[in-house]
Length: 287
Image (tube, rainbow, N blue to C red; front, top):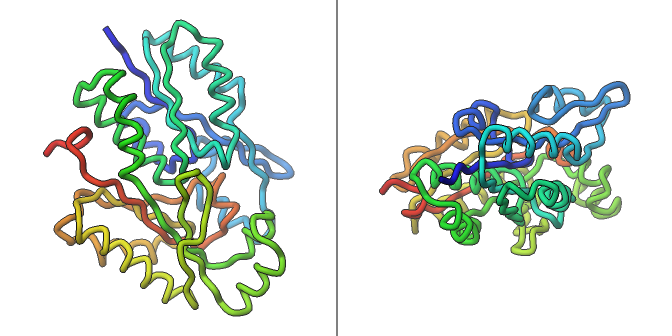
């Protein structure tokens, strides 16, 4: 009889409560300050990171290999026969390859590693869809075969308050960052099918960017039913206002707010606002 473990990394943006609810094993990124190191989501909260950003921008690192190995050993010890791991895009992180190498040392555990080719809440949306499939009694092979479809049904968009942190982290050039700040340009960012960031559109000022985000989300909701995750860094009030403008739409199955993982938030800074949508499908919804 199959006993299937579900694993993801902390780029999924799922809360500890949600992880416990669905018995999801977490591989935390590391957040490194000059005087201390933290495990993402385990012993550090997003708001702590954002409050300290003006004074220090920490570095981030992959989940510790020994911790990944301990997680696989724990899974085996608890009698699991199979494991499904949903990872952050391999184009943005080496986590997928680290997990792959560790999994090879646990041949008694039949494991599928899925490169989500995305980041943040979309990873969490995929993971939760898998969790619901497990609840509905789907087999390991059925879930593995469904993963590409689940990924196809997920997308996300966000805008940011400032380009400063992308610039300081080397993700955009100094000239582009300076010009963007000078003209108050706010990009609306998504992730391509190849698993890398791209600029979907641009807006002049945060208010216009938020209006574009709202229209984009309403365009989705005109066509199908969706689960929605509102993404935010350090501005819960703004995210709550955005949620309240959407929540009563007849095509919203479920909607919640999720703070961006600290390990990702350090690269965009406070003031990010965005959304993730997961399209309804009978494989992972009770229709």
